[in-house]
Amino acid sequence: METDANAVHLDAILARNHHSAEYLLQILRDTQAYSGCIGPDAVNHLSRKLRIPRARIESVASFYSFLHLKPHGEYRVLFSDNVTDRMQGSEALMTQMCQQLWLQPGKVSEDGLVSIDTTSCTGMCDQGPAMLVNDRAVTNLTHQRIQEIGQLIRNRTPLADWPAAFFHVEDNIRRSGLLLGHTLLPGEVLRAALSPDSEKIVEAIKSSGLRGRGGAGFPTGLKWEACRNANNGSEHYVVCNADEGEPGTFKDRVLLTRQADLVFEGMTLCALAVGAKKGFLYLRGEYSYLLGPLRAVLQERRESNLLGEKIFGRPGFDFDIEIHLGAGAYICGEESALIESLEGKRGIPRNRPPFPVTHGYLQQPTAIDNVETFCQAAMVIHMGAEKYRAIGTAKSSGSKLISVSGDCPRPGIYEYPFGTAVRDVLQDCGAVNTRAVQISGPSGICVAESEFDRRLGFEDLPTAGAFMVFDDSRDMFEVARNFVHFFAHESCGFCTPCRVGTSILKDTMDKIAAGHGTRFDLNEVEHLDYVLQTTSHCGLGRTACNPVLHTLKHFRPAYESRLKSLDFEPGFDLDGALARARQMTGRDDAGAHLKTEEI
Ligand code: SF4
Image (cartoon, rainbow, N blue to C red; front, top):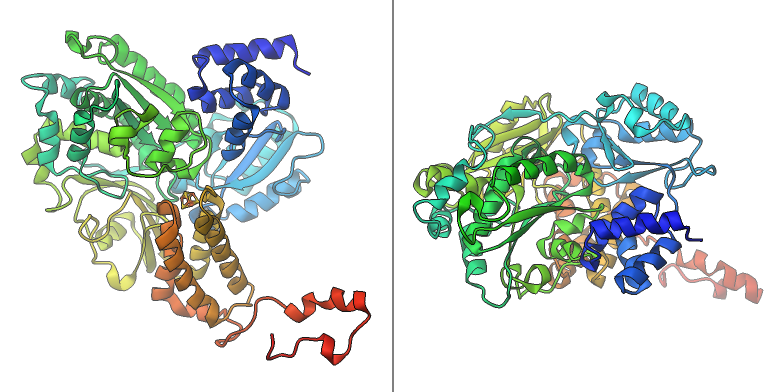
């Protein structure tokens, strides 16, 4: 039953979000923060006020793993389930907490106090194991800390009264370079870009050779130029993709903490270059603790006339930035899915073409880049294209932030010029007896010891930034199994090959792990890869088999030692499945059984 008080709160939430269905995701986040879940009364109210069907609201709410249509406990505990968290003992910690609170994973306690489950990587791999409690990241978990958290939950202690140390997030910057070492003041780059000729921004970015740092490496200058030249819409937009969900990646977390001004400076430069008046920063839900500090930086920039109307007093140069929060959907890191999410929809990748540069946010020309790319763009304008291009390699100019995690004594953020060898990173982070390095997350490349002289860069090892180290005590089969579980969990379900294929892949790896696999299963993974490569709608499906194929190439014995037989062996007992039919017909003679060769 909807009360007046609830209606008043919901109306206030709607007012904060412009009474617009494009803000639906933010409205649903705020609704849940107020009442614990998005209940039927709230759905009815929002549907009526926003004039959209209930089905749309429910379909959006059910898409994002951090949103709930039913109560999920006063305390929602989600253990980060990246492979590095597991290596640091997250499974045992979760078991301990479940036992302490008398609870099964995935269930809500009978008194509605708490639920415990896992979530994909929370971006705290350098200080894991980690968890989220009501969207707040808790790092450096130990058995002692879990014990204390269990007690706080039992006592219904509000999160605001928990020890601040539980929520402390270290930056762990181990090696600074171009971006992390700069001493620029807010507005310094922007002021330089305004004089003598701001038209030259795109030219400078183009001749610097800057490529997007999200992994694909599309030339940034070409993107900005295409967006500037698009004349199909009435508005242009700038979007910063801060939804870094690739397991093992946490560089944007550090840039947004330490270099927020540089991020916003890069976005404002882009706005000047493409003619945008409005920008969005889409922040992953796992980093919601950064929302307050980032909004404070935006406010300071407004007060310094670095945002708002007539920036630096220049007529027509109006630009402002809004922050939108994601809600636990990895696929929203894909740029067109992110734009859908920004429009208040399910984060399902769009058909491309048309590309966002012509048909992005609200079908208007949109320049979308990630956090690091905007910072690099600002540095290009500060240094000049020629100087910038001299850093790195011929096809990969500038520097790259690497998120190092796993088996090494110094995990954290390392900034290198492109062209740095894997071996050099390993040496800097103190890794010894390294068996393999996973570059650029589960969809990236697994590099074995014989390849440690390979170099980071678009010519050899392109990377969005993850660098997970595995020493010789690690079982690379289990690493790959964790990655395929991740893909099956994060597939958005839009296209059948990916939805079914990632599930088959997960089941195949589980079957092999359980000792029921055969060589047939290994061959099937290659067939599955072909199907996913040729029929998937987006990169998630196309790369889902990579972890298995790469580890099979380098560590085949880890697979073969688990196979029940090197020859074909069925994974399903067909004759056994007919037992009920035999029972119903009263037959159990030889003719009612399948012969071995028929099976
Ligand atoms: Fe969604 Fe997977 Fe299809 Fe991508 S490939 S659209 S993640 S189902």
